[in-house]
Length: 566
Ligand SMILES: Cc1cc2nc3c(=O)[nH]c(=O)nc-3n(C[C@H](O)[C@H](O)[C@H](O)COP(=O)(O)OP(=O)(O)OC[C@H]3O[C@@H](n4cnc5c(N)ncnc54)[C@H](O)[C@@H]3O)c2cc1C
Image 1 (cartoon, rainbow, N blue to C red):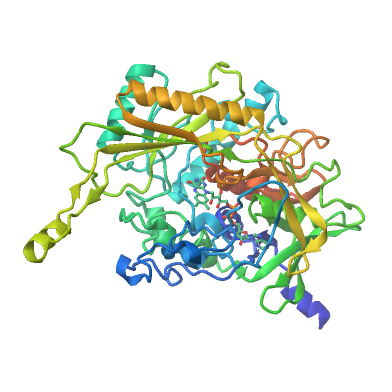
Image 2 (cartoon, rainbow, N blue to C red):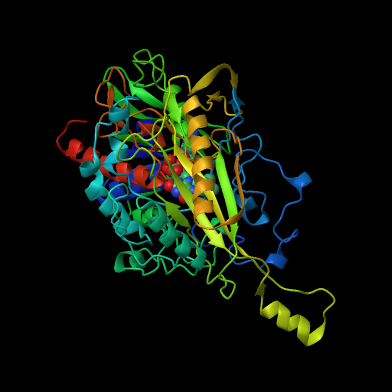
């Protein structure tokens, strides 16, 4: 009887987390015939049927979308103060954390994770990024280079579907793309002028995970062309943008090899001392509070950077008293994120005969230009810049009735000049003291140790922010913008929603936790392929890297199983 129950809880593979990276692990493993269990702590979210606000008009919301300040609460919710996305909000008591230093941790705890909330900006890394730590002497050298990932970038991009252009820039390798969204007239102007005035600085259409020309592979996923509604973070009924829910998870499900178990809070990974490998995963059922175990030949850890660190640190055994694979006690350390402190905007007094055309769900992007080909500054690495140029539209309704009111409502007119906003996305240098660890005396409601976050900006980040402020002001000025306003928002780490590291990849088990295939050096059947594995952070939006590393590692894992090495 007991054996029978154990057999029912035994799979070929377990994937922890169903977000952007976990969805990819599930897809690759199921496609190749592996019976795969995805353990997800949050509730089920079914594509289309569980997007309650997807098609709601503004007047259908109690507060027309904007939540009154006094009603705003909740931790880690990606609600951005809007009613449309309240269904993604995390309950106050779900996972309270201890901020040793101020940190903003945005979580998406439901099936699909943050793949339902992300802004979909996706650029490839180049060797300028992979070679960064070795060139500039920080962290450890990446055990891989661009050539190792290039076929896997191709693999992921073909399936996901990206809109963008082939820009031919060595610092930002071209992706496989469908036609990009149009830049607005002010963005086009900025792009032309930037090139003319600086030569080596470029403003391009940011590549984003939207379907502008769906191919057969996307139609097979049941996805359709992006409708430019720009209401993506409610959940998209067209599958116009990539999410696990619209894409990888249903694809995996179709194979008949996938089991998703929502409401399963993973507590730790089980390590078998005799076998010298992981044999499964312990969970707490969120609804019943019951502790359960599931078993498998391999485990993929994809709970998102900080949560994955916590699960691994909590996976203690006599062999691994400090967390599974953590012989060098570096796990949780060298946590890093992107520096989003610098912001700016300015106005342009021209193109008054033009209006915003369409709703571009992506935005413009200036790839890193500082310290790329040589060291130009007194700080290490650099920043990319997200940019968006538009003109707000308005309707004059004051004192009007009848035909004139209707005419004004239907034919909105520009009500101000063109505005261009800019936000930096800086590479931060991972340092040992920036870390996540587990509390030794405080637990959450599931009996799992609370997470302590201790991350702060460094002098390098301060200098980089100052450089952005100076450079962005200069660029606005040289390009003829007025009313320039740039500032250091001093936002705390985590505000970038791109946290990475803690379980970094490297060549040497003495200084890293994972090898070049994302396997724990000391427990080879555990693969960590979300942001926790990142050795450094680069300046590109990171999720494409997480998905690509996951697809590559999953295929390697299956090859190793065939070779009976795991
Ligand atoms: C508003 C916003 C905008 C963003 N924009 C971009 C962008 O433009 N480009 C970009 O590259 N990135 C962007 N990101 C970041 C992107 O969403 C993440 O990098 C990506 O989703 C990470 O994938 P993941 O699989 O590691 O984690 P997630 O997608 O967060 O998935 C992790 C899953 O694991 C589950 N989980 C956590 N703990 C446990 C546990 N103990 N047991 C079981 N399950 C668990 C979670 O519930 C979740 O479903 C954005 C994020 C936000 C919030």
